Image (cartoon, rainbow over the protein chains, first blue to last red):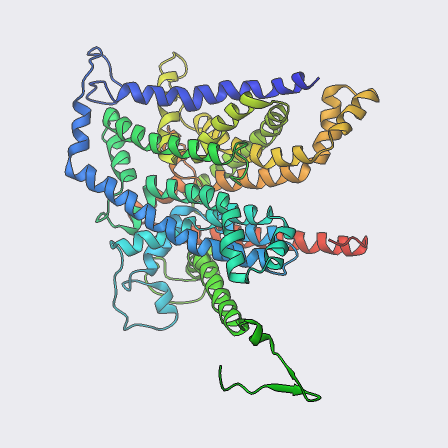
Length: 278
Length: 299
């Protein structure tokens, strides 16, 4: 009986093979090929290592460095403030805490590009609708194109993804463990650092991955808030595919993919069932 | 500490809590509570900042949106008057609704399947299931684009880019959200319930619909909301899987930002969607909590 139901998952396995694994292999092959434009193989297939020269170009290196740095800073900020929000929500007297979590992801119903574009308008005093609404005319600042703008954009966009998993892991902590900690003589602060924080670390790890990866690879936020001054790796990949150099684009995408597969490996080690992600 | 006066009650010295080493942190706790509450509100405000700016812009008469000239409802009234915007909006809804329905139904069935898997097999499929969820949007988008650029070479399928490709892509990244929301609910079901249903003579597929689905409907609903939210908000994957003049709202916005010709009606549309969804949620919550009070349920 159980076997019959278990078979329901088989088509999904093939679906994932076709849409997730096969293209990864395809990109892996593409990065060793010499194809000047798109997928045009009319000149025959030639293997080459020339694509790897792109990796030593300063522009690519800077993009990689920036991506990791900004994603790292945005993730740290998200851990600190996301934990704070999740913890206060967990301790609050709200009856329907799930509702608060949903309200936190509601901004996603507004298009991400539109939100980013609005932030861009706000971080610049020139043509700033909000300042003009409040009658502030004298302000003169332009934060667009600075690292602050990009990190700010990444943080406000992705911090809700940190709150969710941390909140879920906090909810799973048994109340009696906290009582035991207090009975055994820990102060509230000690209880937090010795009991609650380690027990919710699962949520922090999954949350960090949920924030770090999109920050690392996104290209819309740095493009709009970085005003071309700040190039992240997502922008380089996007530009390569736009210029029809699929081979170099694939190479960079494979590197991102390796980082992601490592993260998936970490998640599956920490959480064998893979079920704290949401 | 030395000069502390000893307290006497009825001539007998009485030790205070402090004498036992108790230190009073209640003031610090209060300060921390206030500070952290303020920080929490700041974070929530920042998350909503862009949405609020969009709301302000939606009431601004200035089409160029460079200063606030006059309060107006014009953008709301003319919301669907712009042909290119309406086309993009209707495409967005088409894609998101179809992708949500397909991935909710398929995702529920797959989750049931995974629920009856054990050991290595289950871990393996759960690991693969994480790929669409965690993979970078840009890598997912390019992957699916590459697949369809191969499929495209099959005669008769050269115009496949557009609605079908974008739909496959959206179903692909929505499925894991449904599966991950349904699985924990399946775990909570009493396994005997299914056996009882089968013993009482229900066919397995009937038992699935009549016994399992009602028991996990909250998970299915949560998955549905997640799937719709993700699909509705997606830009990068849609950007790579579109073609033949088919565009959705995010692609329309992207090209409008590039041309610096964003129509103000889009602000009105976004405001209606976001705050409409919030209002619906609050109303639904209010109604369900009233229902609970009526039935005397306490949680």
